[in-house]
Amino acid sequence: MTIPLLAPVLLDRPPRGHGVVVHDATFQAWDRSFSFMRDVVNLGVDALNQAGASLRHLPHGSLEELLVLPLCGDYGAIRQNARACRDVSSAWSGWSRQVALLGAGVAVAWHGASSTAYVARIEAVAAGAAATAVVLERGARVLTSIATAAERFGVRVERLVVDLGRTLSRVVRRLLTRIGGPGGWALFAAELLTQGLSAVSDLVDDVRRVVRLVDDLLELKEQIVDWAHDQRDALDFLLDLRLGHR
Image 1 (spheres, helix red, strand yellow):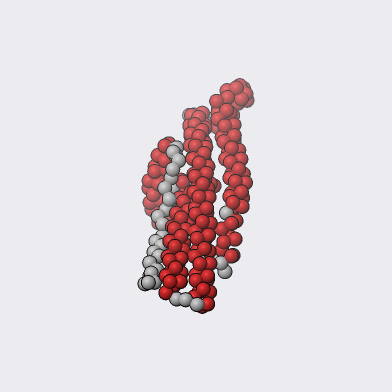
Image 2 (cartoon, rainbow, N blue to C red; image 1 turned 45 degrees about the horizontal axis):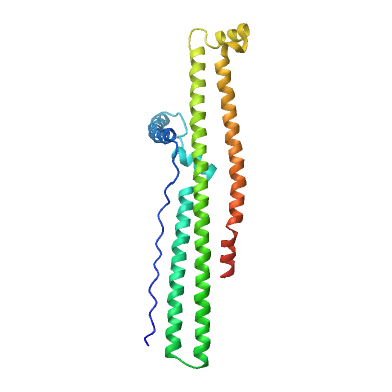
């Protein structure tokens, strides 16, 4: 009997994962606008700096990269890791089957104590590879679940940022309306003295809303930190796999 040749195992770098959760359309529109406006502003900064203004550039990267991903995690990269786990699991599984076939071929063509010992060793290697494939597939499922949860957190951040941005814009417009005319801040201060906060109740409500939204973002951050610790515990079995194969 001809001993089967092992097929080569090719593992390419998996592509970055795509989103599976519906995102906030307003945030995405703002994100695209921000990138365009940021580039225009930075061109202006370059021109002003030539005249000695010493201004800082606005940071590169999208709003998602600057605000969302640092808070909730890069779900695209997590999905990429899940795909990598799944690909390696498939490779281990295929290699395990081929090694088992190799052992079967050797058992037919080679006899005696040495053959028995060799085949037993090959079968143990094949079983170990199959077990590794199962663990990696479990890791892929856990990482996929983590990526989806991280993306959902990201959408919540997007919505809070949109709400915060709208409210801040309203606050700025209302302030400019009150201080933009003759007298500016002086008339605004006099209005507060004579009429109290009732004269600016709409402004006060919006400022309180801004504070509340910031508190919501901070609370969400704490939820994400606690959730991330739980996910680390859920992935500890992959660390055990690495230690077991040293």
